[in-house]
Picture (cartoon, rainbow, N blue to C red):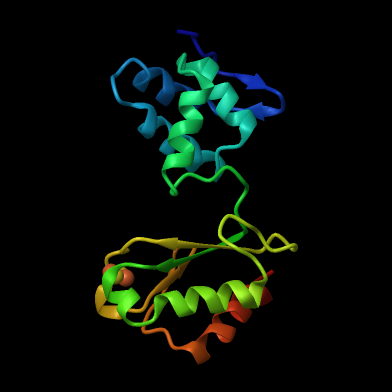
Length: 166
Ligand code: FES
């Protein structure tokens, strides 16, 4: 396996030393690829082609296997998400209260599909599993903010809130 250095850089991608330490610590442990990918996405916000290629070098895991994992789990993103990441909960409680309609409304309003970003780079939207606040169903999050007890008429205000922040 390749030994990562503290200033690993390839094709314009710089891995911070903390991430490299994490990779070096975990790459020798069986079944650690997902942990490494989680940490990598936490650092970069997504796992680009360049980042995946560099991970393959650092971990010794074939690029095809890394891509296999990234594309299997919806959690992993291969494109840079919007500044404001909207996540619409599709857990049972939210689904039963119309979450699918909210998701469609948001997509139509923003003119994007899952895994796409608005032209201004502000928004991306995703469907996610239960986020653990079913009492507030239906729920969506925008980055770390939670918006519960959604109603269709609240959506424009929520989107404007973040649009105005720029
Ligand atoms: S089902 Fe949506 S928060 Fe639990």
